[in-house]
Image 1 (cartoon, rainbow, N blue to C red):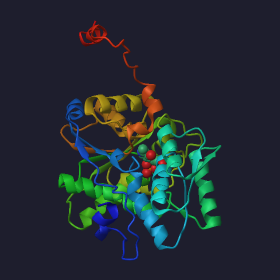
Image 2 (cartoon, rainbow, N blue to C red):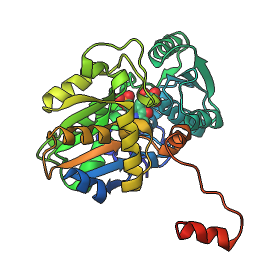
Image 3 (cartoon, rainbow, N blue to C red):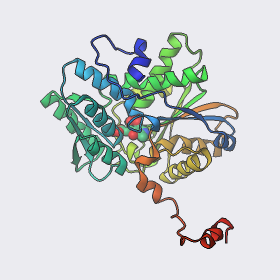
Length: 347
Ligand code: AN7
């Protein structure tokens, strides 16, 4: 039914709001028995890779685009490390409006680039990092009247609250810990607002601790200062100056949570564990939380038996290059039973 219909009563949707819908949301909350056992907790992954454009961005983009149309805007613009651009391009295509996306040149995963181009966006590769591309996109929006659909657009974060509501609707409560990757810091802020709203209307009694994980080479919230040259293999969160840093800091301090960093190596190991022991293939940035939980477990800082939800923000298929650089190649054989038997019998 899509996020706008499903959570109509909790969203700023009126009769005047166009019914934009790509059947986003209602993503699976997957219990991960083997990874849970490894960590001594009850671990669920919310697989946002099942959204129509393959990431959590669709939850907020659907509302941002609907409100832009309602306000009479006829084109949208954003800067992106990849997923926002794919999502914006998809919704623009569905509504038949132009979409301009600014990407850091050479630093966007292949699948995301393919998506933006296939959906028909005007794709602009900026010779600079995401933070600079975002400044340019804001100036471009100001000058042209295009609707800005980065998370500085308040409707993005309001729509993204729906992820928290879905988790509570499924679990019947909030988790003990909410583990989430942090880049531009919008999603952690949106989830915190979503949990708080559900508490206010009596749907849940307790709030989770918000645990935000960043890549070590792009960890401005962990080290408490902007990072002028962010670098990480998890290109989705290669962000040095998060727009929603203030909201994210509030979420973490109000919830008695924390920010923590993980290395690229730890991220890639977590990605492999999630796939090979969980059966879920998520992109590198999405695996920062699992890397963080493994790190905390190693430090004796992960309480036994707690319920943890981690947000698997994007689909692993978006970044085949990084995945292929981590795994072996297929075993090639001649088309004979003899060759096949050698493999099956491990010879
Ligand atoms: C898979 O697409 O910023 O902390 O431009 O794609 O809300 O920014 C993507 C961010 C986590 C971080 N996981 O979320 C963009 C962009 C994935 C992401 C994040 C992103 P925020």
